[in-house]
Image (cartoon, rainbow, N blue to C red; front, top):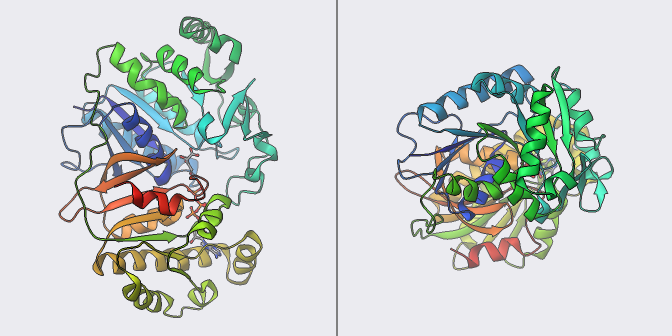
Length: 418
Ligand SMILES: Nc1ncnc2c1ncn2[C@@H]1O[C@H](COP(=O)(O)OP(=O)(O)OP(=O)(O)O)[C@@H](O)[C@H]1O
Ligand SMILES: O=C(O)[C@@H](O)C(=O)CO
């Protein structure tokens, strides 16, 4: 029976935390949307519900998150986690604060920590300020994000604009003094009525300390990094017995393909580094409604074989801006996502059994088109990106890569693993 239920605000983010839990020895399932009865096998320790609530109106995000919470409670979970982006993607309207408040209320608890730190991927928090690599969040690429531009690196200030409740901070020195010191600091803040607490972390050892300090908390919120310390903390509390083999996936055969719809810097670099057959889709023709997908499938059928093939829509920021200016942001992204979805269906019909998808929105479109309802999480390819296997009649191996994650050789390395 699962002990930990996670509400994740996007698809690749859900896979990210699921992979972290598997690394800690927790058998983990990710469901696409709120799980329907029978979608979750009984041999799991954690269930991650992948929602797409990051950029929708706050009241809808709250409603969907509460629905997910109810389903997780019905499935027996006794600890809960709200997963958002390691770059704290949100606006003054939400959705991190409103969803956090709603989950705290629904669980009848008093406080939750907020910790998007993920040191292995360059996200660290110092005096409540989030760094991406060696620059403040507000100086990073995130300040230009089209939907959730992050122009303030102070997470305390960002959260204060999203909630009417008190927001506080536990600084690094109190974290590094150990889990008892951190717990005492959290308890003191709770006694002072501080409901939302940003917690500093700059290294994995800090995340281990945090995990132990919050092992009894009903609700934790953060990026996937803070999940690093949870399996050990739950094990110490006797909640979790299972230790090894959590990343076992069924053997799945079939050809290998990559669909890249992300235009993030890491993905652009991975495309350049990929040396196999590659088709760059004509995105202007896609937006004009031409049958680019059909032509691409004809190309793909001729190339599928022993080496992976790559189909990409990705382009540099100036080209993306130009396309968006010509056709509109929504129309261009919808047209490209529909093409990616059709390509995924066509590739699977043509014999693809192992598929890497780059980009959160793109992954959402692909899993929707493939009618995937749940994924079992397997071994990590690169930090934040595990292989997964779809659960159902004809399982597929899928890797859903966050746009900015993965080393330059990701597209080759991925297929060397399973
Ligand atoms: N050449 C292009 N021009 C304009 N838009 C594009 C182009 N290629 C892809 N897109 C669209 O850009 C969006 C990319 O979003 P997606 O979430 O897939 O990637 P990402 O933002 O890099 O990933 P993540 O959300 O994991 O950080 C999609 O809607 C996709 O269809
Ligand atoms: O936390 C992250 O950075 C990722 O899991 C993610 O959510 C990217 O969209």
